[in-house]
Length: 114
Image 1: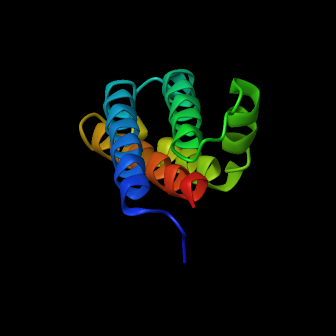
Image 2: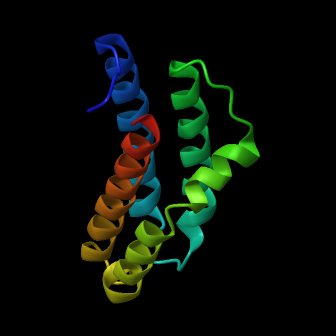
């Protein structure tokens, strides 16, 4: 069980959900262009990770935050599979890519916060 205070949990909630929503928008908008969303989503996830560190008074450099994100290779692999299978299908691909981007970011955010 986490030792987060209710205030820290609320701050994490706001940071993670804002980043997840942003990634969903990027994922939906760039679904038909292979790998294009990665270049927009990764900076959002790095910024989220740095912001989460601040909630706990931990200063993270961009490289430390990027290392944390690279540790989630499994979720990125799952995201890649979804892109190959359906991302290029108009509408359905946009929805799936948006949901996957948001879910991966949400999972990453809570993993970092915990």
